[in-house]
Image 1: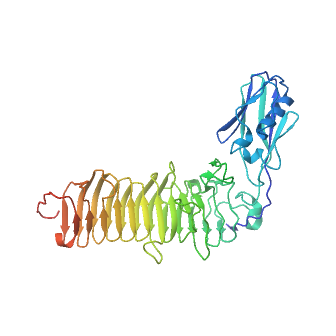
Image 2: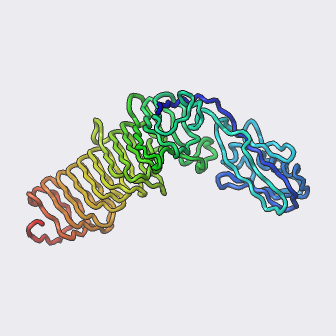
Length: 442
């Protein structure tokens, strides 16, 4: 076990991809180059030598104006396609050499992925990476770590200084570190955004790995992931995927997110015993559509300002057993087995909340379904934001409780129990013309 600190010291190297054309082609055959699902299809013309095909392919990929040979045509030109611009526009344009076409990355240290296919019966086409991209933004490059060694199982990984982003070589799920520590002193970014805007005029949906994936259950290591300690402005983007490995996530603070509406810290993990604790900062758990996570206990709190210190969004693909909130702003889009709210603001958008205890703070309950057990004292439960029908099976109100449902969206299976108080001791906002039947509390 060793401590590996991120330095980001490697020199950038441009990727070189070589497309090789062989076999026997005939007119009207097609050759396709694809990147991120975007395809450029070259239809073979009159001259069908492999050298001629390579020349025409290079022209189609690299130029919007170069005329193609007789009967050659192409569905689109490379510089017009966002993903292709990263290896067909720049200092080095696609170049034909004999029966090959060489593509070189526009930005040193930025990888790209292409595939090739064809409709020809006897013609062949293949592609190979003859020089791999490398540089200061790769997790899996030894020169980017203290000791010139990439982290391995049971290592302690530290990001605590500098501003060099960790963007590529992120698929490391077979590695289970003992701990990952990311302090406020590190201002670089970890992981890639959902939309690539490196060229703002040509954005596209990012196809490379977007999360730093570390951890697998087969290693039986409980990963301690601590983010936001110490002084500094922190990172504007941290994306960690703990995979099937068990993770104990502690968020002490975060930087200001680079994108409005998207938390600065994005995490996901599928181990059933994951735990999450946050006292300050912005955190999204399985934030994007289609992502999944499992958490046994999540604690949302505060450090000095109970109202604003922490902001957490939990996605619809999260399975959560126990939720405890003492402060901050929380939005849940998922089912929760047991929830205790004593401070802060909780917006429950969707999913069944089985057992809810509110002793303080505010809850905007916008989900449908059945809330089985509700205990409300000293806080506020508000059903006004959504007019859909829902059911509360057991409802216990204590002195100081505030319950708001002026539209009458809630059906009370077993009525409302006033415990050690009367109607004057609670705020009960319900529709007019309702019958209250007196009886003993259950």
